Structure formats: C-alpha cells, structure tokens
Length: 469
Length: 94
Ligand code: FES
Image (cartoon, rainbow over all chains, first blue to last red):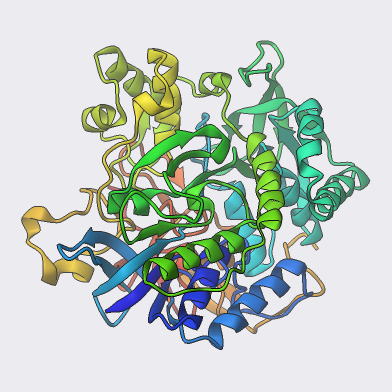
C-alpha cells in the first residue's frame, strides 16, 4: 500500500513523485518507458553510446538523476491497465510488467501526458507515415531521422521542430505542409513573447529550413498519401480559413516518408476510467478533467497534472507537478512550504496556450476525410460507414461504436475518436460537449490473456475482441 | 549522411537478427522498429479487415500498428529491443 502513486514519469509526474517522497509519503511512480522523461525528455536508447548534449537531454538527465537519488519506488516498463476505486476510497491499479499485479494507494496522481491528433486522409495508413510526435520519439530515443525523403505536414510548432530535427540528424526533407497560415503565426507571436528563448528556438528551426531551401507550403493540407505498399508521395491542396480544401489547387510532392499530425490532445483515458468529471475545452486541446488550480479532480484522492489536464506544454508541466504534489500533501495533513512561482507558471501557461491555439481543429478539416478513407485504422472502418450510422440515427460515439466496431480495436479508439467527433459535429451540428466521448473501459493498454487470466473470468474479460496482443 | 545517422553519434556494435526469414542488422539495444526502419523495412503486416499494408505509426506504444511475432507472442516493434539472432515473424493476415 502506497501513500501516493503517480502514473506517468514525464516532467509533471516525475517531479510530483519526487516532491511527495521528499515530504515523507511512500510514493511509487509508474511508466511504460524504461526510464523517466516522458515524451518531451524521452530517454535515449541503450544503443546510443555517445551523442551531442542538447538542452532536452540535459533537462531529462537532471530529472532522472533527481529521481534516482530520491526515495521514490520507480516502476518502469510497467503498464497500468485498470484503475478501480475501493470502498474505503483507496485506489487499486492493475498493472503488467511488475512483480505485483495489483497496487493500492491512498492518493493517485495521473500524469499521462498528451496523445496525438491525426486527421485521417486517404492513404494515411500506409507504412512510412508516422505521427509527428512519433517522429520526435525516433529523434529522442534513437537519434535518427526517418530514411529517405521526408514530407512533414500538419500544424502547430511541432511541424517545424520535426522538419529541422530531421535535417540535423542527417535526413532529407522534401517539403513542409502547414495548415496554419503565416498570419496565424503572426497572431500568436505576442502571446509567445512571454518566452523569448523558445521563440528564438522556433526561429532557428524556420531559419534552418530556409537555409536548406526546403519549400514551406503555408495554408495547405495533405489531401491523399500515394503509394502501393509504402509512401511514394502526397497530393496536397490549398485550404481556406476553416481548413477546408480548395478545389483545383492539387499538387503532387515526392517523398517516401510522411510525418503527419494536427496537434496534441490531453490523454484522458486514465482519469476517465477512474471516474472523474471531464469537460471539453478546445483551448486546452480537447477533453480535460475538471480540476481546481492545484490539480484536484472531482473525486477525492484523485489528482491530474501535466498535459493530460490541458495542453500547456513542457514548460508548465514540472510546475503543475509541484502543484499537484502540494495538494496531495495538504490533503494528507502535511504542511509543505510553497515552491510554486505563480508568475513563472502563468508565463509558461500562456506560451503553451498560444502553441495549442495553432492546432485547434477547424470545421473544414472534416472535408479532408473522404468517403473511402479508413477512419478506424484497427477495424478498417471507412468514413462512408460512419456517415451511414449517423444518418440512421447514431448521435454519439457510443452508438457509432456499437454500430460499426469503430474504436473497438487494439488502439482503444485513440486514433479515430477525434475524427468521429469531427464528422458527427459536421453532420449533426451538435457541440463537442453534446457529442461526448465513448464510455471509458479497461484495458488502458493492450494486455495479453496471460497477463490477466488468473484474476478474472473469461466472461468478463475486458479486452476488445480483436486485440493483436 | 542519408542513412539517418549522424557523425557525432556513437552507436553500439552492430548485431543481426532475422525478420521474416531475412537477416537484418541493427545496433545492440535499439528497438526492432528503429533497426527495421534503418534497414528500409516499413511494411510489417496487413490490417485484419481491410487488408491494407501497415507499419509503425505512433512509435510510442499507443497505436499497435507495429505488432510483430516473437516466440509466438505478439509484441510491439517499437517497444521491443533487438538481440543477436532474434527471430521475428510477421503476424499472419487474418
Ligand atoms: S508504432 Fe504504434 S505501437 Fe508501435
């Protein structure tokens, strides 16, 4: 039994765990990676013996060192697949990859970070298409860029980071395709000025692209990814203010890889499964747990911090981790000296919000999803089938899910639910809040029958039918 | 420079493993996904219902597109590290 468990060892969660243990709480920190750092300070693969030190590496190493010299019980390569509240108000986690199958705790902090938003277009399932965030994982963990020529497409700042980092790591970039216009960027500058250092970094990325004569197509979208078994190229088109495709503007661009994504969304599966209240806030990246300023959710003993409680970005994450730790200590009757600099938090948050604003989905995006596009990658459900469900009465993701099996595959609906919501919104004119999300169900991560067989009946086996794992 | 490597980066020794009957090299300790990608292999399987080709996509253990088979167990290529002589099979099309 722990006093506190933190799920997610990124900058928010790891920092929270360290503070909790410093204050005498018996604390465990769980992450599916092999060390702390999360996505932003992702730990390098063991195959990298020596590499230039970057700022992200430095910050990540500092966090990992602090963690190592703390009393936190770190459980890495460990996945939480179920969260249940016990009668006494404690939390029970079901995990794989640990010597224990169940862990219990009085306080639970969820710091699961972000997940990527990727708008389906024809061919997006082809091998050679990676998420933008996926590309950053490749950079950080393996210090390698995708092979051959890379097309980078989507929106927000990640686009320029991925393109310039691909070049830095010796890859080639054919083109950058940005949904955002130059004007979008200009408009976000004043808010971003709260962090001149990061602005400088962003300018450096763009400068790298200009220096290497990489064409940047502003206000353009991927219309289709072309190729038989792997990517050969993409068809792009101009988009209007709402990001709807403009007819007659198609162009073809060669490239064998596509890094593609439309921003980050809070990864809320864990807080939803735990039963906390959520609401939709596009400024924060989508659905977020409803929290107070420290990170207390609607359920006692349950806290959320970091990007999964709103995409404020990496700068704000450690501070938000401190806040959540403060709340846990206070609720446990421990007086903790204040360590949060509210001015610093506000500046970090403003910067994060400005970056997130560039990625808020606009109404026209839905038109990029053609009738034949596979919306649900796992189950191979095309848009037409989803439209049909809606036309015949389905108004919610739950109804669409039971009608088509969309979202019931091994990814747990992570990559199709956003598209389904956009399509439903277009067809029904309902708000995202009205449309809602499908009911949260275990497992949070795919588990094998071996992993869980000794603690349940086959009848209530909570894995989706076609899970490949 | 086009192999995605960088002069300033020192990698562990190269080892070989088998993917779908073909010998592939990679650096000791890296993931199957990274090694295959460097070897130019991206098409890992076909989707169960639509039969469309698939490969690693999220590269962080979320999408399950990179599933491969080792010792009869289905694992994620992006979360499994290679070792000398490792035998990897494609998952069968369903
Ligand atoms: S590429 Fe998504 S799980 Fe491996």
